[in-house]
Image 1 (tube, rainbow, N blue to C red):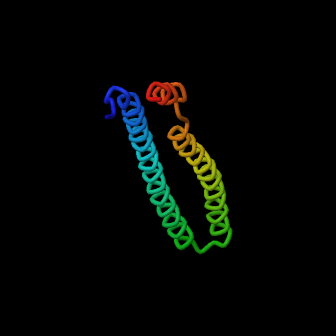
Image 2: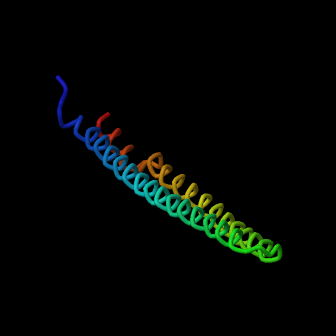
Image 3: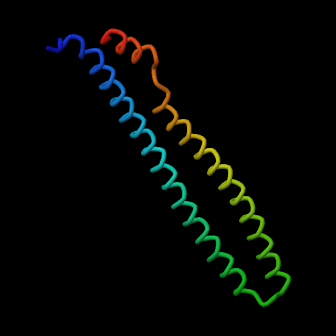
Length: 118
């Protein structure tokens, strides 16, 4: 018969890994929710900016003012795009780091449990 005391360290190691996996999944989900909220806010900002450009462009008959309105919008769009790219890169890095935490095992705990079971 199998001695249950031998299986206990392995069981503890599996349970420890499962807890760590749940923690990583929770952290990953929180980061995704944060990113999702950020992009929804960016959609709202871009929508507002587009409507403002439309309003400014159509409220004047002057070609110079229309050009100024387009230039202002282009400057803002370029700055927002650069910020969006930076945010996307940082978010991808953060998600990658969080995901790596799942695979970075605590070798001492697992190895000790396996050696004790053997």
